[in-house]
Image 1 (cartoon, helix red, strand yellow):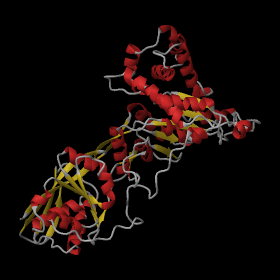
Image 2 (cartoon, rainbow, N blue to C red; image 1 turned 90 degrees about the vertical axis):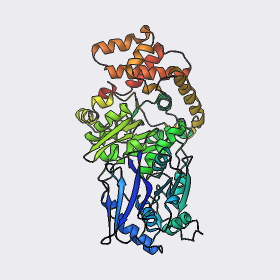
Image 3 (tube, rainbow, N blue to C red; image 1 turned 60 degrees about the horizontal axis):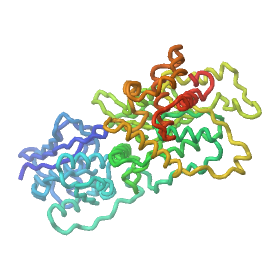
Length: 517
């Protein structure tokens, strides 16, 4: 047989496109060509596949070998096509039957000696294969557990090309040495996932604990300002522990993003807990929102999708990085445009930003040791632009706990107890928005919020006057109402009243100076 066909998958963001891999063999000079908008790595596939076939005891087709990847207009990148090209070429040579390739997808990198190496993006690729109607998938053994998270697919985890060919031939599968863990490019760290820190570890900090509970219940962004050692990182790390577990669709979406990034835990290929991402203040725009040369990869905001993004020392970050956050904070996705195309990554995260009160970090601390001038403090806080701050619902000053709390306070309330209240509040919001595309208060658009879910006019007197005076923007007005609804949900009230609106306003004005506007 001179023509053979099989399937692979090309990824555009988290969306997979099933690619038909065709191999046609004709008489002529012995050479192999790959057609169909491929990158440099994929161009080298012909050499890897040919060497792997020879070293696995099989002949490569003689003559002019034409490999077509269709649709031709879809860009194909990376080494994940190696196994599909080799399988189709061996079928064209007659080593395996075309019938054995029907309904199958092949996704693995080939070593020159025929071993199979795992690749990134297996989870979204397997999902695309199932949705396309394919019934089986052949992957490298380390990727088998990841691919098996998609129901309706028969997953074959193989160690070598020789094992794949033997399976397709229906003969006894030969033994093969597993790929050493220290050399296998597995998707994620070679260590178990750490258990989530618990809120019981937080001593004192009652206002901050309350702010975290409100943020978790409504999906509101949070800014913490305080001296070094006050507990900002401690609090942020415990926020995921009071968030609801991921729904099935969210788990697949989050796991797909981490599969593409190469950060999917090797021993837990389906992420069911809200992810936590911490970014350093030296983070670049590409590191934050995604991008890179060649294949476009998700940034920190997408890896934090459905979870928490902690930005420490946010006032020290580049201005361009902060401004790049503005659109995703509201849209819940990031659009990355390149000359090669446009990629959309989901990025619906909960931002926890932390900063010092001044450049030296000692303003407002006991003893008054701050050496910063008022002008230096003003310049420091003004690094956060007004449009960026306008998207932060909860702003809070926190102070180091006293010695009595540090040594004598009882353990704080556990994450499990706080999570119960958060789940009850979210259930109330879900019931209220039944039949609509929103599940949390942070997601409801301002038009619907004011038209259908506005508090009583008597509750809005204060913020109405602030809006009329120009000290509160329309965006800020809507965000205040969303926080007020979350406070009402936490207390079980059917609608926000004056107390909830006043508390929401106090959260928004919890920092001095420009940060409180």
